[in-house]
Image (cartoon, rainbow, N blue to C red; front, side, top):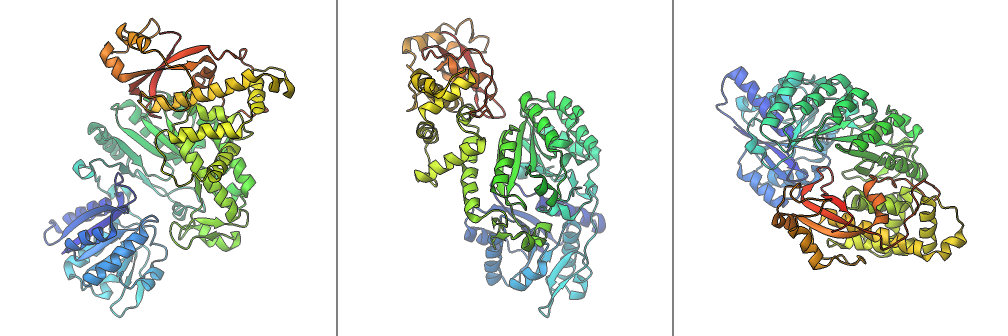
Length: 640
């Protein structure tokens, strides 16, 4: 008897924790009860949805398995059903089972619509798969209906063609699931997913985890031992898939402290958390962490109080913001913040406010997502009441609601793409805050940028490396007037002036352009180790003689190459030098202080430097990069 557990992942670097858990748990139980694995073969087959489906089908067919069990999610169900349909045609005696969140809540309907599927594993699968495997080993592919009726947690097609669903299965202990990563060769070049708890204490209406409100934790000693294994084996990244990792704050704190105290200097850990649950003790642990040791994913979803109450979330938004800003200032932890468009009682203007408030929390990434109406969720039950119009096909994304139209959803789609390209890419970290000061709100900036892309027919284009920078330069030039540039820079310098003076002082408007071009170039060179000059650069290039002398002489008093650990040849390969105007340094040195300034803000600064020839030099070091953004290390010096 040969049984194959099959996974179609979204990307090659992903691994499917579920199928490996099923394999490990089943083999462990069979050895415990029978004492041997003789008589059956249980294998795991992983593919990606980007593979050719016909090639996947052929590969699975060639395994000649008696039973196939597929792990089904929102991102792979269509591909899996296509593959299963064809496999059944060429191998009709192969039993096909589906499991996973995408099929658990409408299993009988699915079986009724797809006659080539023999059964569905509903809910948690470890114990169920074990019992099914045991029955197949004892009976082959002709398991009597009366025996299947005793397997809890399944729906299946009976001999007479009728569909039967058995009783719900009780949940197992997390400690009974074997550790699957003993043989790391199976996971080479993959992100490793790790589960230290299941379930969630919260009841968010859009989430399937809200159905099971209980939380089960894996023994803390086991967790620490398994983290130690990752450390010893220099695993690159471990993603904890716990729905709310810090719902038990003391337990989370112990794990974070263990990771910090035993850091191997290499492994990164990802956690989904509630940021408002972070306390002073957590912050003190975070402060000691190596940059890049952990990253945090935070679900904000909305800041509309009525919406938050309706979707049954509980959170202290001001505390969440305070904690995020504190962590941001530390500069050693990547923070990912989630928003969801299309939630109940959230109209376009309300979502704009949620976006601007989220932006003010300074996440490293801001995910603007759209509501997915998941099968079995409370949101699905309320769909008619909310006037939810959503796609019939996965990922069941919202198209409109009582509060937001499809036209408005399309506008938000444009904003989403602009946020992905210009904010989440980390490639415009300094020029973007500067650009933002010329618009009333961050959302307006991205909305106007999206409109510009549409006007210029730029969506859907495969851009070359410099092109995104050039488009942003063109947008600034065409969407920010000279008067606006003068007015904003005067206000930032706390100069008391009126519009007539702004118009007269062309040098201020020119300075605004110089700063933009300098910051655009700065971001470009931080990311790209290139020697050519970008098209927008107007600064006078450094002479070849001065450039070479800097390296031959071992740098300067301000920047000694020896102290950096380089000889002159190593430095010339690892480093690049560019000119920058001194007026640009505020947005380079102040860690994005211009983040949320609007044209009506006034901040007290030193006198505005208006000398366009007041220059400095930036020395980029590409051998040393920021572990959070990937930007090159840099040093600003006054002379070569």
